[in-house]
Image 1 (cartoon, rainbow, N blue to C red):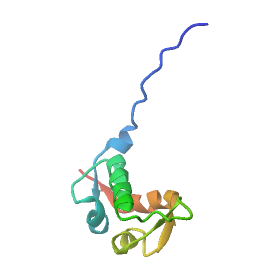
Image 2: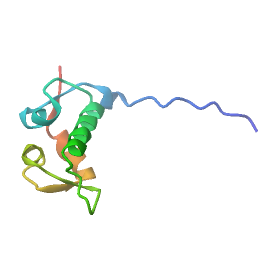
Image 3: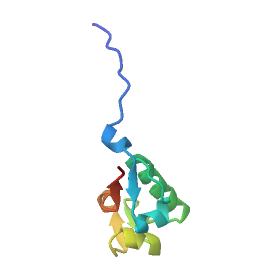
Length: 94
């Protein structure tokens, strides 16, 4: 059996492209352009710091006032829905 070399996974360039957060998202992650991966990391840091993950269902995020504006006024969203909603608050930098 030939031993295959493990290739290091390359990050998708689309995820590494700096994106500009809008005013609502900037209140949570800051206002400088950053890759989507960094935006997601900062949102999770914010959620953990403010204890916003639902205690019964860990897949749900409870929004405080700052996140409610990012989540289009919703009080609670799933992790997967959160990603979709956050992407709506990012625009490409030129």
